[in-house]
Amino acid sequence: MKIYKNADLNKKHYNGVIAIGNFDGLHLGHQKVIREAKQKAKKNKIPFGVMTFEPVPVMFFNNKIRNHRINSLEQKKNQLKKFKLDFLIVIRFNKNFSSQSAEEFIKKIIFKKTKCKYLYVSKNFKFGFKRQGNIKTLKKFEKKYNFQNIVTKPYKKSSKIISSTILRKKIRLGQIVEVNKLLNRYWSINGKVIKGQRRGRKIGFPTCNLKLGDYVVPKLGVYAVKVKSKNFYKNGIANIGYRPTFKGRNLLLETNIFGINENLYNKVITVNFKKFIRPEQKFRNLNYLKKQIKLDIKKAKK
Image (cartoon, rainbow, N blue to C red; front, side, top):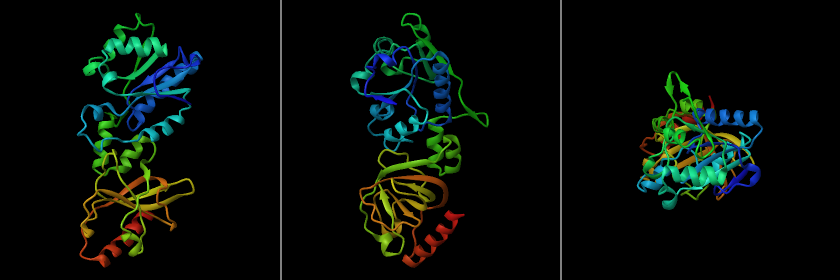
């Protein structure tokens, strides 16, 4: 998979099929769009790629929005690799790009740079200055700019349309089992292990600590998780919250990995969320906390 930082494609990727969208979370709905686009490319024996935007546009327009992302850019790239794309275009979403009119985007990016033959989008796709462009706009300019726009039908689960907005809501409610079904994989947080105050180690449950960055904040509490690094893939438990027993002030993801007792500072790990166990709570003292952690571990291992 060739990764482009702009839409200046190699000639070998001209005249192909492109699926376009934010693809935050890359849920089953997004996967449907990508699979249908790939089938079209395979049938016509032409290149197949995906175009996405960085940062997520809503976060660019409102810098007060935090904790919004379902997956990071690196996760998105890795997840898209599994679809065996020929290429991925990551458009830098900035003031200059966002000020283009809808027709300018079609003319400059789709027509002149990618020379795209088939453009796949979801029903609610919006683009151009002030999001004035939509699927009707794409249809209007098809002949003029020599491409065919194909709108995929929404993916439904239990008669409900799946969206990134719904996923964020479910994550915030701690409905991780449902979230994982809609992703067809574990929802995960990826990051570099930072130094904590080593309280977990002192009470017999050492933890790897991660900051949340721009990720959606799941319901505060304890989760059964599966942790992946370069060297292992192990079960564990994770607490996300402010550590009220220790009067903590900063939001942190602390993970106790079963069967691992090595120093992982500055190592990159992925914490895959399996199920919610209990809400975060304040304990009277450390003995009560230790007893509860032992119970949490039992539940996580079930």
